[in-house]
Image (cartoon, rainbow, N blue to C red; front, top):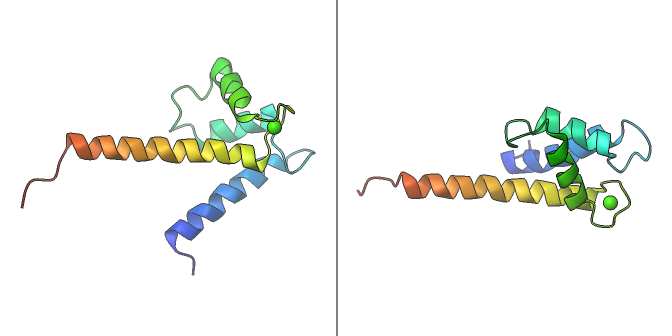
Length: 102
Ligand SMILES: [Ca+2]
C-alpha cells in the first residue's frame, strides 16, 4: 500500500497525463488543456482561475522553451510553485497562531 506522500506524487503525474492526453501531442498540455486542468483541479488554490489574463500569464511563465505547449518538466514548475505557496501559508499560520508554551 502506498504512503500518503507516494500517493500524492502519483496523483501529480496522473493529473498531467489525464489532461495532456485529451488531444495530440499526448505528452504535452495545450493552452486549452492547461486551462481545463487549472479550472478543474486548482480552483481552490488560485485566486482567479477563470481570468483569461491570469491563465495567459501562467501559460507564458511555464512555457520556458516557448513551443506553445507545456511539457511535464514545465508542469513541474507549476506543481513546485503551488507546493511552495501552500508551505508558505502553512508557515504563516504557525507564526500567527503559535502553540501555547508547555
Ligand atoms: Ca513548452
